[in-house]
Structure formats: C-alpha cells, structure tokens
Image: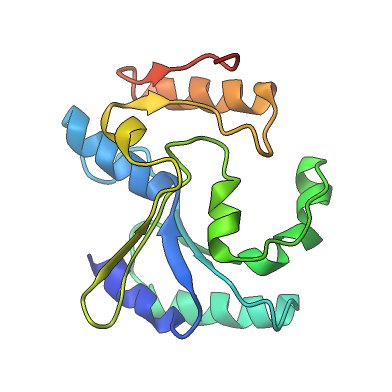
Length: 174
C-alpha cells in the first residue's frame, strides 16, 4: 500500500503500477509465500507523449528515487510513450508509438502480466486488465502474442515455474 500511495507523485500523468510485481504478489498470496517472494522490481509506468526526451523521463526517475527511498524492492519508472525509441535496439522488434498507456499494457508478454493498478488521491482504485483476471487467480500463464516470440514466452515460463511450480503453463499454440 505504501508503494501505491507514494506512486501518486506521478499525477497528473496517467500511470499504473504493473506487470510482474502485481502478478507475483497475488501468486505469493495464493501459494502461501512471503508477499515479496520472487519480485525483482516494481514497474511504475506512465504516459507523457508531449516530452519524449530521456531527460524528462530521467527527471521522473530521479524524483521516484527520492520518493521511494527505503523501499525494499527497486522501482523501475518508464514513460511508455517513448518505448518505441529504444525497444528495437533492446529486443529486435520495431514498435509503433503507443497511443495510450493502456495500449502499452495491451502488448505485454502474457495475458496475466498485462495488468496495471493505481490508487488515486481520492482513494479510488483503477485496474486495467485487458484479458481479465481469471488467469491471475487460476495461476495460469498464457502468451500474449502481440510482441513476444515463442522463445521469449518459453524462457519466461521456465523462469516463473522454477519459483512457482504450481503455475499452469498454456502452450504457445493455443
């Protein structure tokens, strides 16, 4: 909850805490593990199409470092409006600019990790789950083939199954 409250510094930008840290927290609860087991970082994503410079993103990263100082798990802040500028160099796939924060989440590698949540300043929860939450609560991994290859999907499932052997992995072909 502390991370969700601190993340409100991102307003007025649209933002979410997303992907693995949410999923793995739920998996940990469902499988009786410590809440932070297996979580390498907390993805905090936002959308600012008006300033695609690294300097602007770096400014928010620095602000986040101050805001999240003392948080046990590192917080990784990324402007999803600028992902197309570096994605091809890092992953070998050319991307068109995302038109929204939700469009970015729509492309994340699995149906279960395509998930974002935030707690706004009024205490209201905002959840974005384009594939729903059924896979999350049934411990099911299913590929979202928008961007990833079968090889990337398999490597992710192998890594996650080592930590959570209870996971049901759906084949690429389904």
